[in-house]
Length: 147
Image (tube, rainbow, N blue to C red; front, side):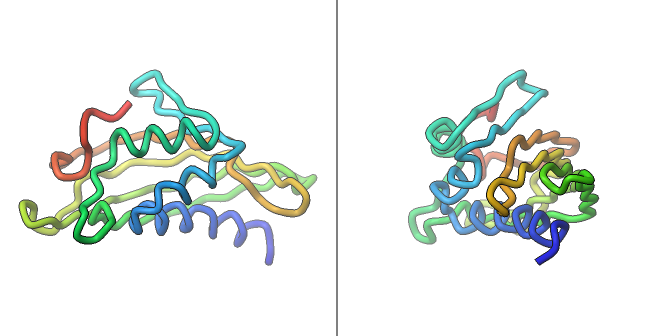
């Protein structure tokens, strides 16, 4: 698999894991990485901190075991350095949600700025900077104000 495709798969894997309610899987993606939220001047690093953040802020519905969301990652621009061991990606994300109390609708749209490292032939998140641009009704998604 080429570098661009492997990195693109990581972008989509994050969306798949969060939509499936697999918070442990999301945290594993950042085992050696960090998530930054500049709007809140905060960040979390490593498996334990990332997992704790998602448990603190993500509403999981018991009947499905998921947040009842669909994260659509799109417009990815991936740039790999010449050595093939570091890459950057900029992408957009739109999150839809439907619950018993909320008809299907977009609840947030924003951007991800990611840095990846290639270690022993495999790509890993180094940092993910989350930038939110447009907000809808997040009341059925977040347990409290996210960082």
